[in-house]
Length: 278
Image 1 (cartoon, rainbow, N blue to C red):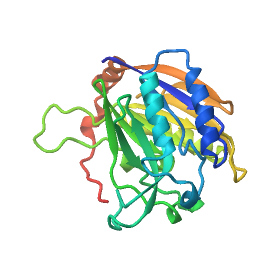
Image 2 (cartoon, one colour; image 1 turned 90 degrees about the vertical axis):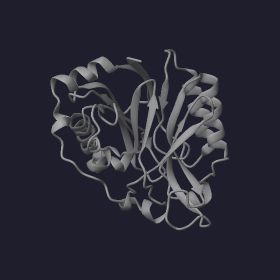
Image 3 (cartoon, helix red, strand yellow; image 1 turned 45 degrees about the vertical axis):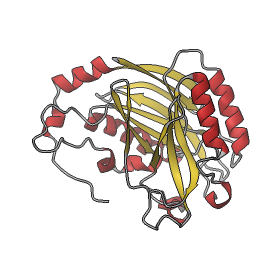
Image 4 (cartoon, rainbow, N blue to C red; image 1 turned 30 degrees about the vertical axis):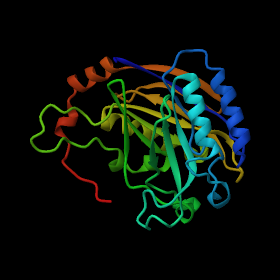
């Protein structure tokens, strides 16, 4: 498919109130007027960026995942965003019987199947590493011939984790790993210059579309978020950005335009060979 349509939901969040957030987000999703294929929610959309997973985290049979399954099925869309989850060492090294907490992105399909990505880079400045376990694997989803790399907030500061990797030796004809890079976030307004700059850099250096979905408003720690959710093309041109206000925005991206950039400016062919050691 040559086009793919995304809806970004930039919103205030009810602090540590799962039921209120799911109700609010369902109302916003029901208000979407344009046909869409993928709906993107912010980081920790059911609670805000809370450091209380011991009391608020759900397991994979909890109400938030059930809500995502229902919404994706009813609307016939892919629904994604991150939530706090508890799990028995699914991605960590502590063993299968030790309970762990994750800032986990869910990629929910309309048929109820889903993929997960556990945030790799935990925000130590806010103590995230004291409560959550870091993930160790990227998630690159496939949708109608498009490849989508899914990451969370602070991951944005670490370009190697997002970098398009070159094909293995002897593999001829493989294109870039992915076409769209998505960051879901609770990124504070006081560091919004870094948010905007790094999103733009990720698009240019990886020759891909970048989508950043951030929240708005103050959280329970009195930290203000200005949103600045954005869509950027492979040349670094901003196709959409919204500051301060809540917004629901639908955009259709073109595979032909992306391929045109990659063909005319084949910079990825000159990239350094590397591997990421976890």
